[in-house]
Image (cartoon, rainbow, N blue to C red; front, top):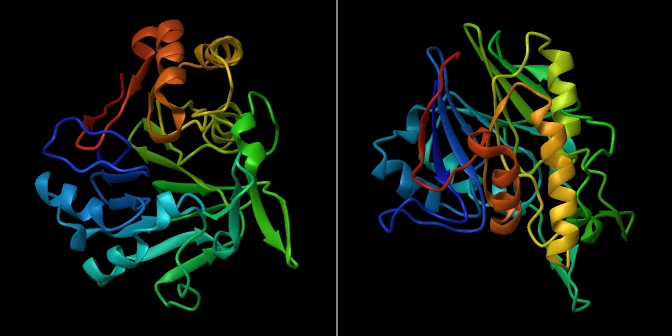
Length: 277
């Protein structure tokens, strides 16, 4: 299985564009998948540099309804004339960040996507063939990031705390290899992994995605304490981890310090070749 990072906050070199957002291109023996589209169409430029033909993507999956993962959705629909785009129905809602200075910032998807025949809305878990299991509705709040506290959804004209029912994750099975792909893991990577293991009791081999720890804590001591607890929980699993985007540089370094080679970082332009150990 090949996984290419088409967009991320950082890049492997100056050759690639980087921006606050995330996009993965995933190639299996049977499918070509786009998981998230970054904040705009820049992921298409990086795809070309990696020799990836976006017009050949079979399925697109949007992890949740935030602009930094779905802002490039319109660009994808123009570049690819055949793939369906799979989202949770609630991802088309209105989402806001309450910033520390008291201002409100819209962080939802671009308007005008409702009713597009290529956008398939789901509620809960579903499969896209035998290899692709998508799941939502993650419960539990173990190692839940306080960075979520400033994120809200609009309901009946009021802003209420976002419970991230619009978030979905992907399990890919290729032979005996099982890979979990998350977007921001707003529901907490431990809780997401717990549900993934329930759906795939054979055990997850690799976990890729953000962990939403960027700017979660005001001081290093609190961040260290949280990351130490999180690393301890993740180390109990047999997975290897590749994180990125909203994890943040300091939390990543803290996790890597505790977990060593089992925690690595992905940047725009990264190419992974994954196989069963």
